[in-house]
Image (tube, protein in one colour):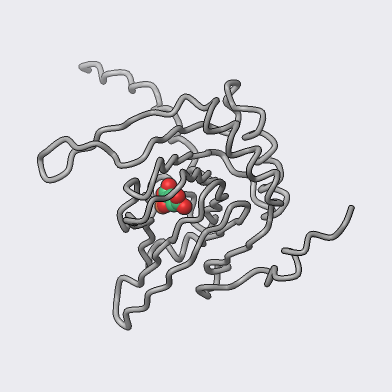
Length: 209
Ligand SMILES: O=C(O)CCC(=O)C(=O)O
Ligand SMILES: [Fe+2]
């Protein structure tokens, strides 16, 4: 196969933030453009995307993007998600247990600055985001001074790895953009903490002597 001319411009992995758990690393071109486009179209058309509502300031509001969630061993896992999971696991050396999908229909869909819910993460294990479809900018900002902000364009076929430690210090989000934008899908791979062991059976009641 002829070499992909765009690959000449692939600058390889870029470390955006350093910490002792691998920091935040961006890998453009992890998936080639044609495959990223095929995966995007099939997931867009075949995932049962859900509209969620969430309480905000005592009002219920639409979450401004569509979502879907799967456990790694869900029998309903789409074949593309199975392949993506295996490949991301091989690339990162981590056995992920959950897949969270986001579908940004246009530039008005977004995710507000946040860190991922710590109760959904196994300490020490990273989150990996695979991007498909339109490029969207992720804004990463340090919570404490010295304030530090990074805008990174997440291209189709790229991986962004964020350490657990980075979730304690930084917020990330996908801001709305006023320009007309095509849709984007992201897949977040996470290791969830194991469910707490089922409670032990109640102790027999003490009987009166
Ligand atoms: O779509 C993205 O790249 C970010 C999604 C995200 O931050 C999340 O699902 O927690
Ligand atoms: Fe997130």
